[in-house]
Amino acid sequence: MTTAAVEPIVESESRSFVLEGISWELYTRLREETDENHQHIRMIYDEGRLVLMSPMLPKHERIKTVVARLIEDLTLELNIPMEGLGSTTWRREDLAKGLEADECFYIQHQAEILRKERIELPENPPPDLAIEVDITHHPKSRQAIYASLGVGELWQYDGARINFYILSDRGKYESVSTSRALPITSDDVNRFLAMLGSVDQTALLKSFRQWVRSRGA
Image (cartoon, rainbow, N blue to C red; front, side, top):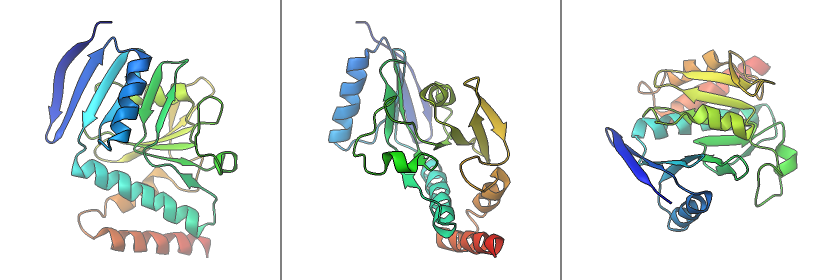
């Protein structure tokens, strides 16, 4: 097996390395060993190409955390069953693809995975919704991998705003304004994300909860 490191891509605190010719067995072993050692290294695997990314920028972590909290508050206020699985690794050996979501949620298929300690694809359904914060312009398209894994909905932050995408019957993501998984639009989410930097996150979330309650009144 031959591996070759492509020139590292650096942006501020974030660094990415690309390795070619990596076997599935090596990828899964590296993923498991870094998880066991609590090392914060994100990996994208796509048919022999492995991208290693570490660490994440503060802006990346802030956006993904706030979006996840908005989803948690929305489902709590509207009594929508939900299972959040954070940055779980999703992979399929038959497709030779794998990645970690920034955040992911089961909503439509929540009941199917409620009591499962391990969720294997494709035996179990993929997450209904994944969150991607693309601050550092990853060298490999994560959107195509999510589509291959069958994730039904993707919210992708491009550095300026959140965009919603729904997986079509053709296996491609199509841009939409309204979520299929939750009763909210991308404009709604972006309006609250725009508050970051002017108010603290507690104030932002309080404002969001008030907005959700006012809609249900």
